[in-house]
Length: 116
Image (cartoon, rainbow, N blue to C red; front, side, top):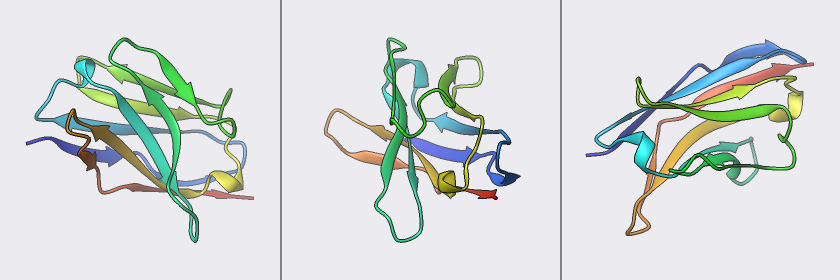
């Protein structure tokens, strides 16, 4: 059974940094594609960053140059380092894994709030 558990969210001032972590169990995170999504109040969930099993990364234009997605193979986690945070980055952040049947696994989410 695949489980995803996010941590690391919190309240930070604009310009600050946070590091989110997604603990993966039930599967080796190194072998799968993973993504970090976010959902702001009243908005649709959107992809912020993704990483493939080969290590290729992709970022939404709104976070490019500020966010970095990475994998910690020893801990079996997928992390999102967020720098130069803006109030518009305020959202609940979710990690995601879609399996071969296109079934989506989601964590419970972690709140990120950026004050101006």
